[in-house]
Length: 256
Image (cartoon, rainbow, N blue to C red; front, side, top):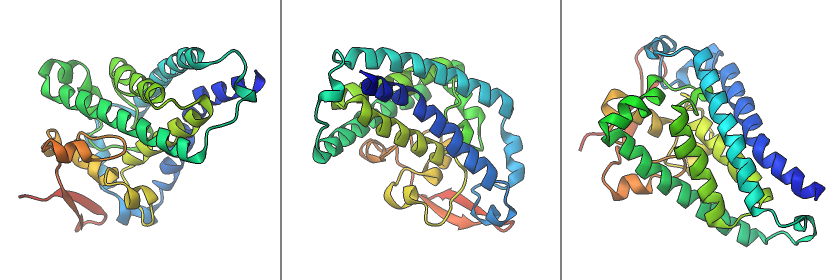
């Protein structure tokens, strides 16, 4: 029982700890002048954001409070009378299969809801536009959104992927922590050399930066892992990374 509770508690709180540690690291390295050549936006462009960083922190904490509540309910549903500690953990192949299923479910859920929030003028104005007040994304603003959007898109989407894959709480710890790191990285505003997310995922900080710009609101809805739905349904906007005259990089859309 103690082991099971440990897995459950880690599954609820570790992704939150990971979020603030990883985004905090980006906040620190983002102050280094030596990294200016890897910025997707010049320092001064953060003035385009119409919401303060203090407000962003409060908004993220609200979403994470909902996240804990849903996680508690989720792990209550999947617990099995204290026998989890005695059960043999699934094989690595089974875990890999569960992770792939959970990624597919989460990507599918988020793509269609995210896209609909842009199509619906009402939903965009009253809900999704809050996330887009960060025209120039930064790491700890990754989860900043309307509480209802955070609950439906991220928290419930994560719960659905967890249940659909059949993973146990221990595997869930790794999945949700990884998904958290990936989401933070997609909003970091940096294109650092050697970043594994840029190497293995087409959906990355530059790809998502396109979506946050005024010309990209009808493209690149996919998140957080793959770009398959954008490519299948014609909302994929390819881009090129070019050096700015004033320094840094710029993700520019490629015209057909």
